[in-house]
Length: 53
Figure (cartoon, rainbow, N blue to C red):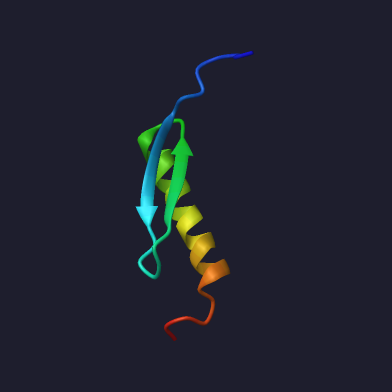
């Protein structure tokens, strides 16, 4: 059951250190970009800790 429009906006960002593409979703384009950047930061922190130092 839908309670409203939940489509929002989505964007993707490629990790510069591997083959992963992260997805960010938000209610508007700016929120989607921020969400994608946060997801990329978390991915790098969690999966590339100590890489390329």
